[in-house]
Length: 169
Image 1 (tube, one colour):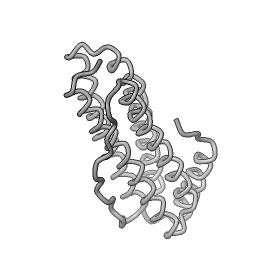
Image 2 (cartoon, rainbow, N blue to C red):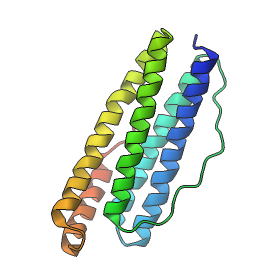
Image 3 (cartoon, rainbow, N blue to C red):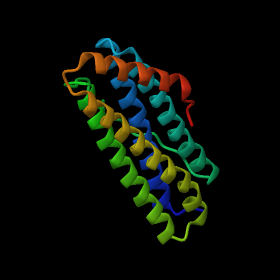
């Protein structure tokens, strides 16, 4: 049984994952509006993945016999300077989520809440993958340069291919 403090922290993370889903969905709309259909598809897939993460927290809290609570979510930004600017912001956001997961994992360890600690290990691995993915995308965008429309076309196409290959976790 998780403590009330732990339940509050789990609900906090649930809402961060929900915000992440909304953020990526909004970003997909920006991409679609700018003619970056591959990037839009990639971010829609990523939004669905983040919703799945939220649902994992939701279900886990309910399995603990407590109430999963969805709080008020801030509206995500709607404007970006470029795809690179957006990906920079995504990486920053993923690092924020990673720190939050690590803090939650540390709290579970300190409380000797082994079930929650074990539950969170999947998210620790997932966040490592997320940061590596967005670092890789940023590396590619850096390689082609901000003014290279042909390079951007190929990166957008690759992101679209990644979207069709991914399945939400």
